[in-house]
Image (tube, helix red, strand yellow):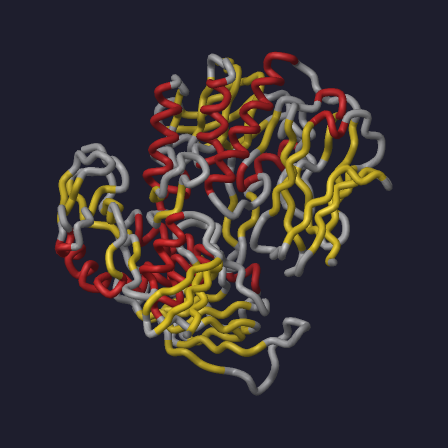
Length: 417
Length: 120
């Protein structure tokens, strides 16, 4: 059985970031396994610009951003296996995969990084009543058809959900000659970045229906009509507020969920809030030597952040390969008032790195607030914020030594002033 | 005097910018956090400019289409015409990222360039 020092599963932004960091931190044998025929992951279909601002201080398209990372990884001597599907991850740090060249193969590694990305919530997940016609796609599916395969999936389009991919697709399909009749968002606020509301909807006069949802789809073979309705504070449709749109296509941009069947089958402890693994300050999961980063850990707003987190997991894995065990002095982190989740979910106080980044999202939009980090009653850090919204992930950076001798759970909470 | 509320589209920060106009002339810009944001706000009230991204047909590659991008902003009101031009284009692999597909695209001074490499 072939053995590697480090194997990264997934060659998207987090996986490439992790592989580069492993190499830069002195790890010799680094292998990336990628199921698609080329590296880059979802970046390859995100042909719009806006990538790379924090990583390369430039505005790049998704494919150009991926190519930069891929070139860097190749120059550093990372080995790539594309067209390679990992079928099983085992707790003894063996990986089973299949590809056309090697067939079914098992390898082992000192450290494994899961950079497996996420999948889109589908029609089944949001329970839209009606028939089952063709023409209902997730936004990312339609994006792949258009930007990689060169097929426009429809001519008259309605979009459910104001997530960024949905907004980007509203613009993209409009430019390609389709008519986008509107976007419905269940919540009373948008879930997309303000710049995408502006440049994808306003620029093309596409209406946004806040506090609305799709209540029915009609059409036998192909979608013919969608019905939307206003929802009350309980998010239930209000009778009598229905509107209909004659469309052949409905795109769903209703959320992303970390893709974790490999981790689940391996017995990795999952966080019910992020739907990703519980990791520590080095991005190590509950199984020693197995790490996780990127959208497979917690869904990020920007590819730059997922790549950055991949890099941090790469550093953590490199530290583990060099120093061995780092699992002493366990303290949990806790999502306090108004906070949906906290990553990392656990800290090992015996081996804290110099800098630890905490990621979290608020549960609802908040006005001027304080982000408070405390352990028991002891406040470690307070950060004032003008406003916080669920669609923007927050980031708190603490020095490892600020957490020295931590005994009680570390709570992150947000209090409105 | 009138004020316009803008969202900057230059980066994901999406700064909220207030532009004050006097008879259509910009007299004050507030809320930007970088030079790009200030330039954007000044330009936006005159003629909005955007980076355009799309795909063109490609021959001789594993994929059917090549993603392309304008290497600087072009007027938003030209985007429809730009898309008509893009639909007529046909390129051949191999292609390197930033290869110029159309120089001085529509006379805007911006080049339409490949936004990734593609092997033959």
